[in-house]
Image (cartoon, rainbow, N blue to C red):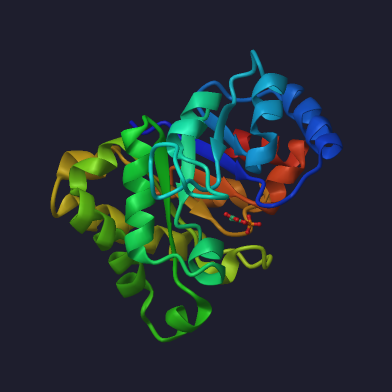
Length: 249
Ligand code: PEP
């Protein structure tokens, strides 16, 4: 039985004041015990969030880490070991905004995945196709390649300590959500790609859906057999909406 996970990706949003408000809202939420809940603030605010959520069972993660796991001469980057040091448990790798806007390659994503795991963090590997790729019928090929490159570099066993997030790029921040059937098709393909190499790992890995998830769409998505929760962007900036999404998982 896979424990659902709902993770809020705050992206590059927030100020000290708005983060304090959001923490206040999160502290007041009644969260379901059977669901793991995480938030991923901008790095600058991670300490504030960890301290502010002290005693509340919400895990804190980061949105990115350096390719090098340990601290050193890499100006402007943050090492996975530093994220672990301040109390993070999870880190996103390969978010489409980083792949597409910042040009992160599959190779860089694999290195970040490995760096995270080497420091005891759980990487959340984001995969997903653009609108053009979907319209060209290439969704499963693209997602399969993104996943395959990590399997090739690190072996399928690495997914025993990782989470996957399927996030169609055309659904991120657009208000368009994949239908539960569209999402399920890709989630099932991801699981079967893993299963071809290791059925136990495939059965155990959590695969989240991300892309304009709202309280109104969450229950139908999370009701699909291979959808184990959500990666939530915009809606995670509103504590009440985020709480309702967590309760739908
Ligand atoms: C995301 O950034 O991971 C995301 C899913 O964003 P949104 O929910 O806003 O589409």
